[in-house]
Length: 90
Ligand SMILES: [Zn+2]
Image (cartoon, rainbow, N blue to C red; front, side, top):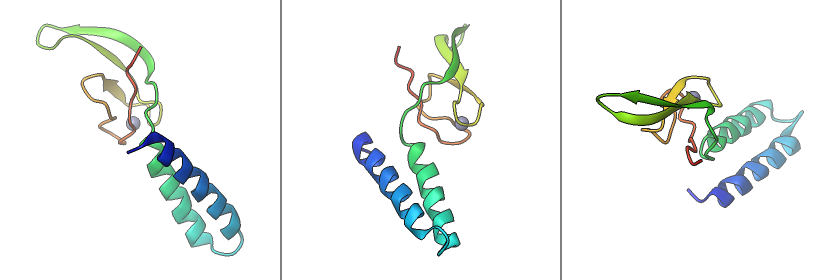
């Protein structure tokens, strides 16, 4: 998905949630669910990144998912727990 379009969609959902506030609480909640799902599409830097090594995999990087704190490795570009996209670039 195009990152710029995802950011624009998030902004629109935020505006929509504001317009619906105090009128349609279920719809506001649905906007917030959509925002949360879209934000996972934007790659974020893992926390506490460090080098790791196993004889089977060789060298790789590990860190924590910035969204759910689960251990993550650079073998995956998403968190296998919550689906957050991860940016392992240095
Ligand atoms: Zn996660």
